[in-house]
Amino acid sequence: MPANFESLALSPALLTVVGELGYTQPTPVQSAAIPVLLAGRNLIGQSKTGSGKTAAFALPILQSIDIDARSPQALILCPTRELCAQVAREVRRLGRRHAGLAVLEIVGGQPIWRQMDALKRGVHMVVGTPGRMIDHLQRGLLETRSIKTVVLDEADRMLDMGFGPDVEKILSELPEPRQTALFSATFPASIETLTRKFLHEALRITIDEPEEASLEIRQLRLAAEPDEKFPALCWSLNEYPHESALIFCNYKTSVFEVAQDLARAGVSAGHLDGDMDQFHRDQMLARFRNESIRVLVATDVAGRGIDVTDLDLVINYELHDQPDVYVHRIGRTGRAGKKGLAISLTTDRDEARLEAIQKLTGTRIESVKRRAGKGPGLKRLLESIARAPRMMTVLISGGRKDKVRPGDILGALTGEAGGLKSADIGKIEIQDRLSYVAVTRGVARHAVQQLNRGRIKGRRFRATLIDTFG
Ligand code: AMP
Image (cartoon, rainbow, N blue to C red; front, side, top):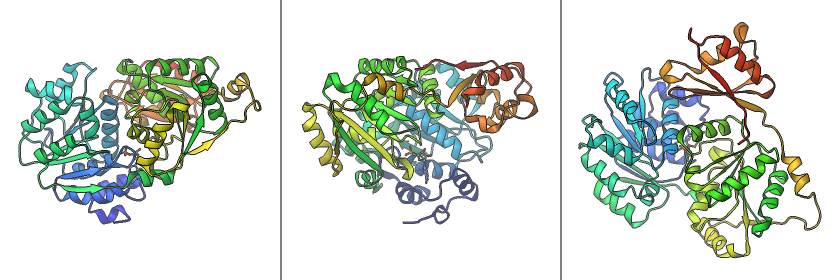
């Protein structure tokens, strides 16, 4: 396996970007998939989120994109809106040296006319969910003639979510010859049927995930019957220091309760559930990524596609029935070579689930105990974990479509105009029509004032502090 990117026959521009992003070495899925895709072959890849698979397919696509032809040349299908956003973000990051590259997300929950406008102006790549993609295809809004590559990302999830017929319809309507790549964590019969039908002579790559995951992720279990769960959660948060923690629950109601109880006690916590509208989900995720929220409570559906590289703790508030959901959940931590920790709060009734998980992953989950009767009570624990986050998020009413770039926001806040030090400014995330910038708590109000008084690229935008916990 090539140990460096230079041996992968990528263009100088892409090698530069990969270096700038700090990717020193290709991940196993990248070493295996990039040469196959560069050679134009169909690919079936077994790998999961966190393995670097987005870059594995995005780099070869970017290498062959013709920027002058403003027509869709690659189509990427993902199961959820969040995953689409995550993939589009990684593609844009990797494509930063392809001046003029336009990547469009075609997802539900957003006005279709906006996507139509973007398509009319011309895009190079589309990333979308099957449902909305079908809408565009059926209305003849999506020009398919120049599509050369199709990627099915997290194919097993797409089928689980009932997108099978849509995916098949989309694949049947796209022109041949083309290159098709399919990535999936599991290979049930339905996936095999799909590959037989649409991925002729594909090369198969398998990356041994569970083993790899076990090296990077320490897995613990803590016995807690239902009425002891919340104290056990607080104990875990206190006992295992973390910068950001993701807590998974099986039900929306538990998500809401846990997040609310934590937030009430002053813990910087937010929540995500499937019912939230797109704007609030995006906002919550941006705040979690930029460290304005330290603890995020989510259901599996809402938690898919959460793209946070520095996540150091995942807690299973409730274990899921299916062992592969456990693998997905804990795979959010220990990414890209970092150490992670996963703690599961288990009841007596979870024994069979634990057995199934250990069998699937081939690992043992270590048992830890809270010292009964000793140690701080719940009130003291909450006091101990209640800590205001280091950063706060400022929402700015301008984004990529307003030609706002991270450097413009940085410029408006620092130097003579803004008066802030660059050390006070954290992650800057630019979306289509708005941007999020993290600033240290102490200077947050000042930053908002400066942004509202000043201009960005000669234009006035509104800046607001997102100030609430949760
Ligand atoms: P993915 O599996 O595509 O969701 O990627 C997981 C994370 O790893 C993303 O945040 C990527 O930016 C990051 N990543 C991808 N490839 C590499 C690499 N070769 N070295 C370090 N980080 C990487």
